[in-house]
Length: 255
Image (cartoon, rainbow, N blue to C red; front, side, top):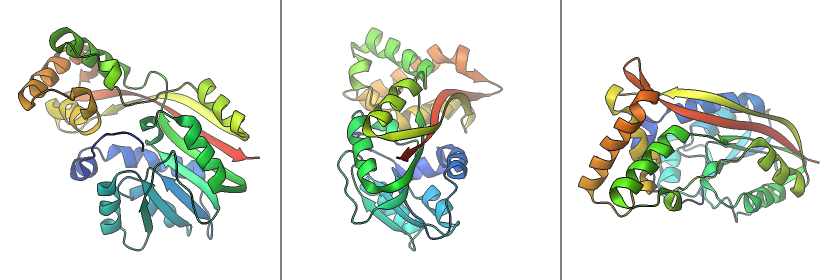
């Protein structure tokens, strides 16, 4: 949400659609009901906002990316979408629930996000989310860091756009705000990429482009090939790339 990452909406929908597909499990945890108002924070191109609306809930989709919101409006014209920053948004109305899938690891100021969500919720409202947890995509990140530092003199840690907390770290922030955490799990989810040999390249291009800032197109292409060689022994099998996802999923109540 507050990242400088530039989203390619067509790539996101066609090649990285597993993000929304896995998010359906988070919708089940949310368990939206008829007449509720739900904020989908970091809604992307709107697929899960649409899924939530099928239960009869009134959904507001919000994302920092104007291109994502434009795509969402085109795909789901009956739903409400707006551009907004997770660290500073304000709603005109209190909502019954705030939902977020695969978005909050893009925000390195979690306290501000949690405060905004608290203010947006009615008393007794729930915050249900999933995002990258401690150790998420660690094999990919380490391979990229080795290549970029060794061959290009780039400190990849300075360009890393993500925040991957442990359950203890994030639950503590929620509780300090006043939330009561009623459910939390940290789990492995190795995720098969599409497109065979090109799977990691597509992932890096669509979700980790920030790591290659300052490189020319030729240097980026060469760096990706080197990262593939570094990561292949651990992440490539059965003629496909499996990204080493580790996720946090939780529910917290505005007590």
